[in-house]
Image 1 (cartoon, rainbow, N blue to C red):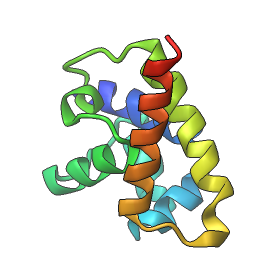
Image 2: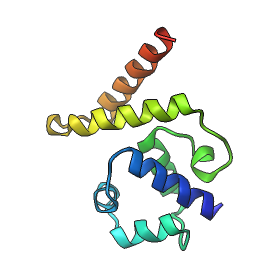
Image 3: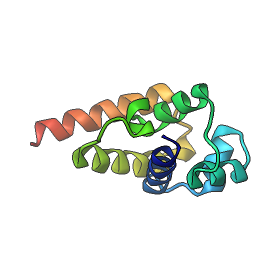
Length: 112
């Protein structure tokens, strides 16, 4: 479990355009802790896993390696995080981000 979590966390962080330092600041932990998670030397507690899954809009099962994610979702999440990062000066709250993700998904479905 720890190895798959490490891989998935790093993949999600990199695709979202975050450095370990930026990610650590978001979760108010040290960048050394992130490095240990991403190398599989340590793993976060269950509450933190849920927070990370919510942040990246993936399930905890995906994050822990218990399910696959299709490439459409991966591309969508990557585009969403680039947009969210570009909108940081506008101070989006989580509700706004969820709304944007819903719009992204609806648009993707409409254009299939």
